[in-house]
Structures are given as C-alpha cells and as structure tokens.
Length: 436
Image 1 (cartoon, rainbow, N blue to C red):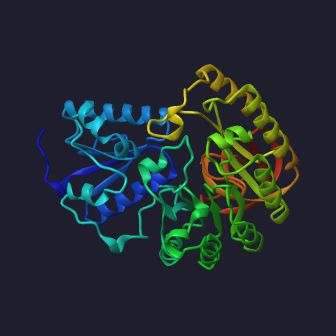
Image 2: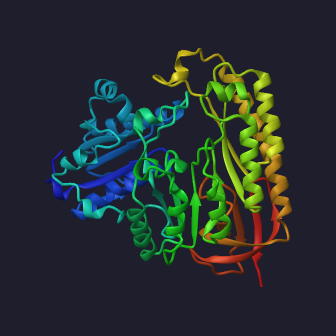
C-alpha cells in the first residue's frame, strides 16, 4: 500500500463508550481539523488512518473495544488502512497487555495523551482551541465536560484507575465554551463529568456547581441545561434551589444510586445510607416538584443476597423514579471489590436485572399515562419514518423517553422547540400532536 504524506491522509475517529469519551473525540477532531487534516467520525468508509477511542468501564464495554481493535487490525493486515492508533480508557488501563496481544496497532495512548497522539501527525496541540471543539452530535445539542477524573472510592469502579483524580475546569472557560456552542446553534447543553457535584472543590476549595449553573444561564442562545452523573453523598442541595429558580435548567437530574440495601451500599463504599437517599429524593421533589430523576442500579455485587435485592426492589417501587437503568456487576481488576469472590452467578445477575426492569417498566407506563392530555414543551431531534421525534425536558438523548409526532400533517425542523399535546402513551414513549 502506498503511504500518503501526513497532511494528505484521511482519518476516521471511532468512538466507543459514554458521552465523556465522545467529548474527548470531538476535541481530537478539532485539533486535527485545525491543521487541515481530513477527518470523519464513526464513518463506514475506509480511511488511511483509524483512531479508536476505547471504553474500559465493564466487561461488555471492554469486549466491544477489543473486538473493534481486532476488526481494524485485520484491515491493516490486509493493507486496507495504513495506520491504526488506539486511545481512551481501555488503552490507559491495559496498554502493556494490548501492545503484546495486538501488535498490529501502531501506537497506544492513554486518556490524557492527546498531545502525544497529535505528534504522530506532526501536529502540536493548540491550546487556543480549547472550548471551540467540533460537535458530532446533532447541531442543536452538545455535551460539555466540566471536570475530569474522580476522587470517590467506590469499590466496584475502575474509572479512577483510567481517568485519575478529579480536575475541575474554570467557570470562565466553561462559560466561554457555552458561548461558542450557542453561536453555532446549540440550544441544549448537557453537563457531564465523572462526578458532577464535586465540581470546584479542587479549584476553588468549595463546591461551585450552583455558581457555574447561574453563570451558564446568562449565556444567550442556550435554552436547556441538563445535569448528568451527580453523586448522592454530600450532595450540594443548593442545586435544587438553582434548578427551581432558573428556567433554563431542566427539571432533570441524573443521579446514579447503585443500590438501596445498607449492607451493600456500605460494601460498595458509597458513603450514604438507604434513609439518606430517601431523604435526598424527598427534598429534591419538595424543592422541584416537576423534577425527573434518572438513576442507575447495580445488581449482582459480591455478597448481594436475594434479601438485599428485594430491599432494592422495594426501594424502586416506593421511589418511583422517572427514569432508571440497570447494570450487571462486572468483576474489575485492581478495584477494591475484586478481592471478594464474584459469587452471584451470571444467571442470577441477569434475572435480577430483568425483575428490576419489569418493576420500572410498570412505573414508566403509569407515569407516561398520566401525561396524556397534557401539553408539553418538546425539542425536536430528528425525523424517523412517519414521525418527528423529540424530547421533553425530562429526557436526555439516547437513554430516555421520546415524543413521537405524526409527520404527515406537520412540518418541523431539527432543533425546533414546539408545544405538543400528548394523545397516547406506551411504556417508554409518548405520542402527541402540535398544540393549537
């Protein structure tokens, strides 16, 4: 295969994993494009160079990352691509093993080695581009990473091994990024981090998320601000007060709780009890009556008994979360939980996950049914089949419910805000018509 010069190469960035990885890929693409490198994202077309941004969170994510690397390594052996680079969480955590087992990859990079990766293209990292990244999401919404890393000590989690300690970005830099996003047509900003509520402790010596939210609400053009990945222990409850008085902040909070059994919570090192979680949820709903709480639960943790699981089921039934997802415990090397036997069988983990989601499915069905007849503000994401598909402020892209509006009698554009009267509902979707 004839090798092209560095600046004539085409590059495909393949992103695996969460929205935080997506932001990292967008920053990488921004740096490459600023140096006139032709870049595509998750393209099905063959490029000269492929960069895989991997996830290493749990077994399924690691398996997907390894399979993707092997797929492109085979293309490189067949001389269908010239260069293959791997970055991200899996590469950070298992670089030595990967170099030995998949030598076809030209170089592996960790989560904070973007400048080193750029050197492969004879490019220097441009600090002046910070806050001006390319957006790979639909043009009307974007993710904004407010910090990197995590200082928590949850026994099941490998994220600190891959992402390091918590590092906050300054309020000024985040406001500047939000302004740049708004100039490019972004209407909804989703704040993400490994630990949202820790924001500011390292930089300002106090939690400063409420101040950041107030500052972002001043940015013209941004209409929705959404909060993701808030840790419940020592939660700064002023956030609820800001949410209640700032109309731009969605009445939505993504707060992974993981479990409800005090014994399991203690073993997980979650630094919170069942009662404290209940009190926090109660306060949230008192201060922000319309709040939609999204949470995730982890089943099959070492030593989790059927009794522990039933405590979790009762908790979910009582709390009636608006949105809920379930993870199966993954036995991760070098975590505190790894020293304990992984003693819940795969079959029991899957069974508990299914049972918990059956409970949530009924809760979601009932909550959606209550919305029939209501008129809701909806942001249009796309047209699919015979429907325009949008979301309410209670829903984040890709993970939450959607609102479907018949396309035959309406003309809507991606990024439009419209008022929709809900006419029907299902377990996880709503149907509606434009309100007159």
